[in-house]
Image (cartoon, rainbow, N blue to C red; front, side, top):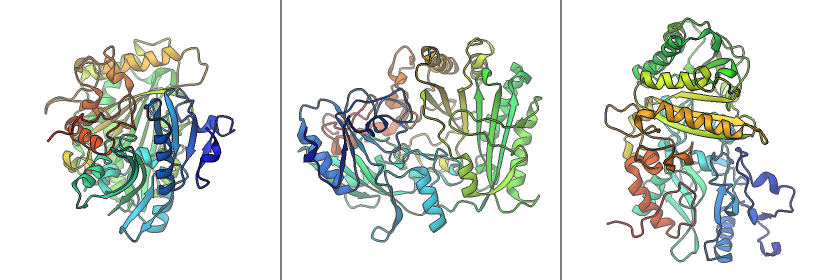
Length: 525
C-alpha cells in the first residue's frame, strides 16, 4: 500500500520505521505482532477515517484489526501473529471536565497515571483504578478496573456515564457512536453497560469515556510494607497466614469503616525469591494515634502479622509489577497522590503468563496446601525464579454493594482477587518450565473445581475469573475440566446480554480475539 494515501492528521508506522518494533508489541514481550502497519490515532474523526479505510482495504476478513491503549494485554489479543493492523490510540490522552456532557472526560489513550495526575490536582477527584501507572484506560475501564481505593469507592465502571465508540456497522461503515447511561435509545444504554465490565476490544474502538460523581480520595493514607523470610515458615505457619488474611477480609466488608476499606496485597513469591511480601494502605485523617485509620491498620497487622510466628522485616526488593515499599515496616502517613506514585509501577517489560481467581470465602485447607506445595516447598523445589508468585489482593467493600446486573461485572460478592504471575526474559531456556509452573500451581489450587475457580452456588469459595487478567488456558481442556467456558468464568449471567450488544454494534465480528465475545447469529428476542 502507498503510505501517501493516509490522511495527514493521522500517521501510519510501517515496518521500516524505527518506531515499528516498539509499537507492535506490548508489556508482555511474549507477543510480538507483524502487522502491515500500526496506525496512530489522534482524534475521533481520524479514527472513523482510519477504520473505514481498513474496512475498505480487504473485505475477506483476513487478518485481525486490534486496538492498543497502554499495551498491557497479557495474552496475544492485541499483538498476535494474525494481526493485520494495530490502531494505537495513545495520542488521545486528554483528561478534562466536559461542560457539554457535564461529566469528566478521560480519553481512551490516557493511562492510569494521566488520570490520577490530572483529575486530582485540578478537581480533587479520582478514578478508583489500578496501581500500575502505564496501564491504558482504554483497556482498564472496560474490564472493570479496580485498585487501592475500590474497597472504599467501588470500581471504575461504577462511575461510568458515557462512552464514545467508533464501530463497524452492518453495512461495514465506520460510525461514531456517543452513548450515555440515560440515553433514550436502549441500544445506546446497553453499549455503555457493556463497556462497564465487558472487556476491551470487543465492540469497537473506544475514544472517550465520561464519568460522573467521581469520589474524592483521602488527603492522607497510611502505607505499610512488610516482608517475611521463607526460611522462617513451615506449613502450619503458612496455613495460619492464609487463614488469617482471608478471614480478615471476610469479616471486614463494611466500607463505612476504615477496616472495611483497608486495601492489601499479599505476594506469595516462589520460595526461591526468599521472601513473602505484604503491602497495605488505609485512608487516615491525621497522624494522631487515635486516628481511625491508624487503629484499622494496627488491627489488620495484629490479625495477620500477629497470627504467625515468623518475624516481619522491611521490604527491600519488589516483585511482580510492584516495587518494594521501603522504610514502611512501621506504617507511614503520606499524601494520597504521593503514596499512589510510590506504588505506581508496572515492572520491567518482560515475558510473562498470568491467571486469576475471584474468591468469595476464606481459602480451604486444600487450596492453602496446594499453594504451599507448588511455591517450592514440595513441588518445584529445584525451580528457581524469584519472579514467580501468587498475588492476593483484598476486594469487596463498596464493590459488593452494587447489584451484579447494574454493570457487566458479574462478580459482586468476592472478598479477594487472586493473580498468578510468572515472568522471565527473552531467550530464557526455562521458558517452558515457567509456563508449566503457573499452570500446575493454578490447577492444583483449584483441583476440586475442575482446575479453575469455577462458579458454584452460595457456598462456593470461587466465583470465576477477571477479564482484565485474560488466560487462554481457560478454553483448553487440559487445564480446565470444569465444564465452564472462559465466557462463563469471566461474565457469568452477563454473557448472553453481552452477545446481544456485540451483535448490535459489531455484527461482522471485526473486533475479535481468542476469547472475545461472540455475537448472536441473530439477536434473541
